[in-house]
Image: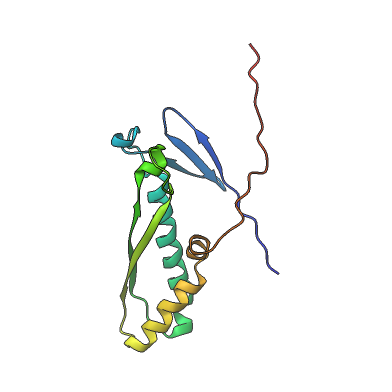
Length: 150
């Protein structure tokens, strides 16, 4: 088995602005002003959609030759529906996405029958898509309380 462990760290800054870092790369995450943020970055659910599209794009590029696809351009448009009352604690609805939709845009000269098998392969081999579509063990390891000495 080729098990890899990936790590990230997030730090809450002012208000709801969050800085996240993995392998020295930083991303700023924030909420739009109508959700209490300062709109200095994507919010977490937009980042999740972006991660899905990026992962699908990487799978597409990595495996195009295997399918005889001359991939000239590829992009994904994504959208998802969330009942915001779950996040705000106003209702017992789930706080997460109820549905996510995406459209692949593929510029190629490859025939349609190759594209369909390629599309199915991308969907079946995208780690982010698989994580969203299937139950994953999400577990809190522990809570560390950092006491400030006064």
